Amino acid sequence: MSKKRVTSGMRPTGSMHLGNLLGALDNWVRLQDEYECFFFIVDWHALTTPGGGDAVGYENLGDLRNRVREIAIDWVSAGLDPDKCSIFIQSHVPEVAELHLLFSMITPLGWLERNPAYKDMVQSYKIESPSYGLLGYPTLQAADILIYKGDFVPVGKDQVAHVNMTRDLGQRFNSLYGKKVFPITEALLTEVPRVPGLDGIENKMSKSSGNYIALSDSAEDTTKKIRTMFTDPVKIRKDDPGHPDGCVVYAFHDIYNVGELETIRKECESGARGCVSCKMELAEKMNNKLEPVRARREELVANPGMISEILRAGAVKAEGIARETLKEVREVMNLPARESLDV
Ligand code: SF4
Image (cartoon, rainbow, N blue to C red; front, top):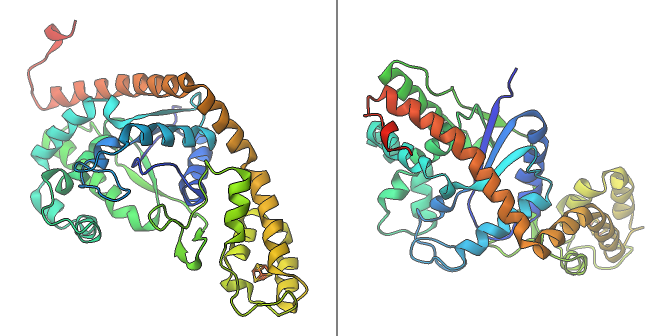
């Protein structure tokens, strides 16, 4: 029996950090063994917002090309294996744009206007005059997924609505034209650890907040950043009793040093452990775990042709499937065949 398909994309925000690794990439690495996976960098989606500051967008193209490559490098460094999954750039499969156009003909405007994520984006990016592309991005997202007939999209609970819109659009197409061209796409909910920022347990690790450890950081950079991590503010001296639950260092021990967690808690609470040595122990554990990621990264950076070839091969495979889907779509929509033009 053929494997079910998983599709997922990521915006080219620049190099990835531990929040991305633990929140999405580790999960993708597991999924590639069980599903036929299509992972793509959504460069067109980056152009739906104006950009500004560190964010790229249609008014601020910045180093978009370089960011796309950096993300691909991070994905492969994190363990995505081009022999097990397809890794490519969204715009390298132009058939997606045609499907987006055709979907836009059948997408009720009310679906897009009621999309809460659209309103959030307009507010959070302070966009005065939102573009047609931004309003219609769920239609592009549906084309991204359905062109590969994606059965599942791995998402967190807060993103299930996006997948539902894709599912509804696929079903609308099938029902309008009386043929089951698209599968019923479902969200693949995954439990992921909450990754705090370096500056506080309540803050989320993010590129825009600058409170992150990048996959491209060296072991020395990582150790330096761990030294700055927020700890229990009332634990001033080594033998002061501490409160691990509010401490970022403890939260990372919970990810990278689980076997020692109970001991760390007891020693912290009793004042037998100091924050400096606690941080150094975390640095050692984290750096050991990240060592293979850094080694793969170094190899890819030293051989630029490797990542180009991975992206090329991924796009070729994805485009083959995309062409088949579009052929079916054109047929059921009664669009004139273009075989005579395909030389
Ligand atoms: S000893 Fe460790 S767990 Fe306790 S407050 Fe300091 S850094 Fe956090």
